[in-house]
Length: 330
Ligand SMILES: [Zn+2]
Image 1 (cartoon, rainbow, N blue to C red):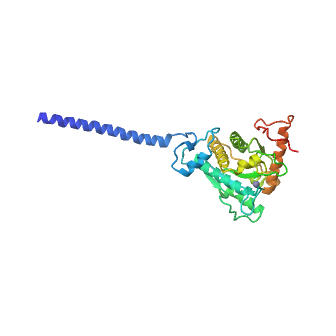
Image 2 (cartoon, helix red, strand yellow):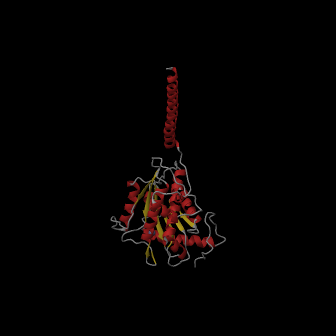
Image 3 (cartoon, rainbow, N blue to C red):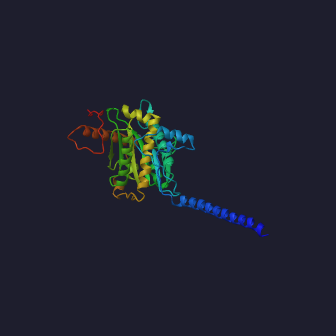
């Protein structure tokens, strides 16, 4: 009996040891899972295009936008919406906007805006992305005023925190003028910072050589806005350099990704950015400038600022690089 009980005792001890080890392993796995889900902070990694992507379409699109000069940060899902971004592709439907070489501005706006939405979604699941239009359909369009009113109402009905209206410029009388123009409310320092970030990102990938920010109260969608808003003219369809960028699908991808990264990073780096407070006096003095005239104003402004930049006696914006290819306008 004593001889027989010894092996049994050994077996029991071994089972107990194995059971304890098993418990430890299971506990470690459960703890690790909980810890990861609960406490992993926002982490970044390099360009998601470099990672193996379960979605081949997204992966190939991201590859088209690869660029070494911007570090693209991909944010983990915090299961909480940090901000709602409303993207507005300018014009649409019967309103084609500017036309150059039979290319309609509305089509460029739509293509680039949809790409911005796609990259924003890929880079940051914590941002809710809304669009005023995702196709050429604008069933709300009865007049320019009705169109602007609809887009403006969307800022409220979609509960947006940030609004970006995306356009392309044209200045047939001076095809040397190029570059981005942002319209921002004068007191909206948050959007000014964000516009600078977008401008810097696009400049760093060589997409345009300069940009300017107009902070006059000019454009209904921006001026009457209750949220951080900008209308950006991405470039001049009438300038050969900009036209190539604006119409090339690969360049659109790069630009859209650079814009999306700027928006995503800014929002995550400034979670406590103050809400925009619209000065009450703006209500009475707003101009209902139609989209065509604001395009035209932006074109003239860019022309003037490039004339200034070409003049060595003029004050220069240190953030604006002067393109050596730009000649002083006549
Ligand atoms: Zn436009």
